[in-house]
Length: 215
Image 1 (cartoon, rainbow, N blue to C red):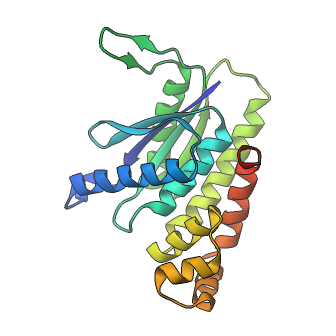
Image 2: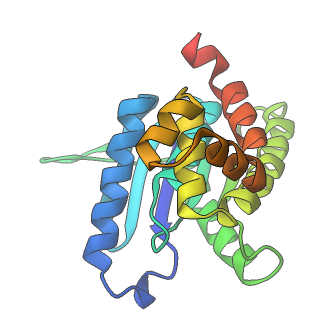
């Protein structure tokens, strides 16, 4: 089983500097992979404003995508289609093209999250689809993952850029004192910002996702 991820930039056509947005995303991907090297194929720009990547586990993908959203600046945001299933890469003369049910599911997922943003959940950014033919027990796992992703997207989307930076730092194990020094603020200000933003639930959820990978 492979977890395929397709990402694209939210409202990319309204950005004043699309190239700058792409660079910000690439920088964030590198930062996340350095701090949490779980991607088997880190998100990479493929065409237009789309990126693609792969993970071995759904928990790894969800953990990495949370860090990525937290690492992005205020004026850049992404949505993510996550597909769980088999990958059957096509070997061409000069490259390998990712293909197969996991990628078809990821495409379905990103189309769904874009529609969801336009209707019931404007702050939603992540959707997960299980490829046809996968084991039935995975269906419940996918349902739980969707509910978790919707809840955390709501929290992250409402955060300020500083609150996201602080939450990122706490997720990867930095102390409040370290974060205060980096931000040039007091430790009590860090604590208050994290509390106001509801960061504790994100940090605990991240710890649960990465417990096996980091143990």
